[in-house]
Amino acid sequence: MLEIKDLHAFYGRSHILQGVDIHIDKGQIVSLLGRNGVGRSTTCKAVMGLVPARGSIRYQGEEIVGLKPHLVARKGIGFVPEDRWIFPGLTVLQNLQLGLKSRKQKGRWEIKDVFTMFPNLKIRRDVQGGLISGGEKQMLTICRTLMGDPDFIMIDEPTEGLAPMLVEQLAGLIKEIAQRGVSVLLVEQKLSIALKISSRLYIMGHGRIVFEGTPEDLKTNQTVRKEWLEV
Amino acid sequence: MLEYIFFSTINSLLYGMLLFMLSSGLTLIFSMMGILNFAHASFFMLGAYFAYQISQFVGFWPGLVIAPLLVGVLGALVERYGLRSVHKHGHVAELLFTVGLAYLIEEIVMLIWGRNAVPYQIPNILDFALVNILGTDLSAYRVFMLVVSIGMFIFLFLVLTRSRIGLIIQAALTHPDGVSTLGHNVPGVFMLVFGGGSALAGLAGVIGGNYLITEPSMAAHLGPIVFVVIVVGGMGSLTGAFIASLLLGAIQTFAVGVQVSLSDLLALFGLTPEPSGLLKDFLRIQISHTGPILPYLFMVLMLIFRPKGLMGKRET
Image (cartoon, rainbow over all chains, first blue to last red; front, side, top):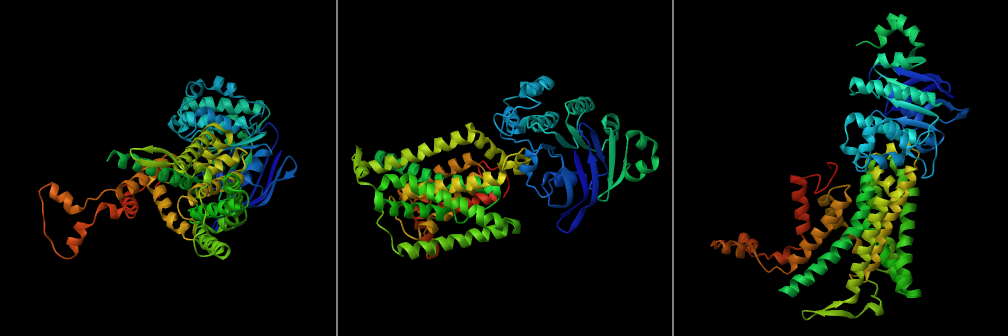
């Protein structure tokens, strides 16, 4: 479904991604782990066309490196950014409506599904996005991306700053996304959720992939965990 | 007195709405793209000249529609083929580009229409006194300007709050990347906003050009005051731009009629200093003479005490 090969990206003169290789199959949840600043978010942004990149990104057999972000999105790739990017002046409902690529788009997700899953968002549907809580913002930003009916979604640090109960709920949502046939790239720092829900994991260090394997492989590999994940 | 207040209110409203037509586009362009467009008032001037030229062939009314559209298309082309290429070199390059463009437009206008004012007249059908209020005539054209500018305000408000493209524009004001990753063509929206903003400036030129004077320096005259509006209103806030436009319109209009000086004010409190030289002249300056500098004074104070403006969202 998605195959990234030898991906390089730069911020000014700093060489952030130094040859990243990742592949994800249909309906899989794959996690991308690593410490802060190793290039995990940049990888997502490079796929999305938000930072200039070199190398190859093949999505459903088609080369998409260098495409503009809105064209990448229209190919069926969704991105949930770490900063959430909730539009503060628009209501919760309007935020969701902008997730639709066109007014008439019909996909796997409808606004009423979102409101069933997250009754809080239903109650606050007419409240401005800037005024809802951090947890609600996180759910809203994921649901907004889902409204565009992506076949592949990248979720960047969704658990950051969330209460443990919400993390559980979020894990449930990500599994539900995959069950509906959407592939997921989960960028995380928390090992626990990644180990629990992903079928494969990548660990990044210094702009490269330094480990690839199943959750079982990682659980038994103390050296890798110590060197690349623990602080 | 009542007459002075009534007509000053009408005039300040007119001037304020004219300012808003210019500043609304400028503030949208600034908050969305980060571009301080120094050529914005030039589009206002082009609106006036285009309308003059069109009125020579087919009269005022077709010009009212065609001239803003032409200016809008021109603005969109400037964004698409000029600014978009300059964008990758940063905001300073963009700013210099718009400054250069302002000069370029002024020179081109002088080449085509000459250095002197052109006789762009208000249409005959509106050239009469609509009503006589308190002994002074209220001209039909002024009422017409007011109607057009209020109509435009309502239209802009509805587009931005009720239409899907309006929501996309509002969202792109704060998170353009967020909007583009949802599959919306943000560069296209930029072009549309730049074109739309230019068209609004053009419309202000069409209805203001014959009320004021259509001459090559009109852009340079109005340009700075529009920046005052967006600084005072708060960069990126349409509501702020609206309030600031009306406020500055009122300050400038009402100041003209106030024949009071600082020494008169001091006298009210029983103070009658009798200085000599410069200070004496300073105390004798009447408020009516300070009208043109008041907005800039206001801007400087605003930047010192409340840099984000009345309703601004970002500190600039």
